[in-house]
Image (cartoon, rainbow, N blue to C red):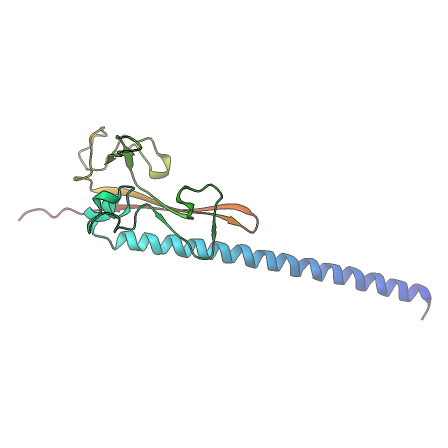
Length: 182
């Protein structure tokens, strides 16, 4: 073999080794990103299923920000946030957790004494609001905590991932079908 042939073979081997290293590195990165996404999606789906399995009239009380209206006493309900094992919550996230449940609620009270209401007139694109929630064909500013028949819900998971801040949103519009009297 001549020196030129050996040099060409080493260059070809070097290029092939570099390409293989690049593929392996990208593959590892994609595995980490897919794993994070799978954890977030699973947590969001599980929370949405928990919400769907809650009696319709109890959803707001189980998943709002008011610990004093919980069905089994103060502080016993799931509330508006949830921890997602395996993911680091975004820096500065409210409550220091990755999961959040968004309902059509507005605080008409104060920070010290909050009063939460289910409202149709909230301008929240995440929930598709404003929109009629009680089936009376009107969008008003009344409290519909006791008469909603449609309840839009968004489950959000925010985390600091391998490639920076990531967000996953899962939307559902839950409905209660009213039975007519015979």
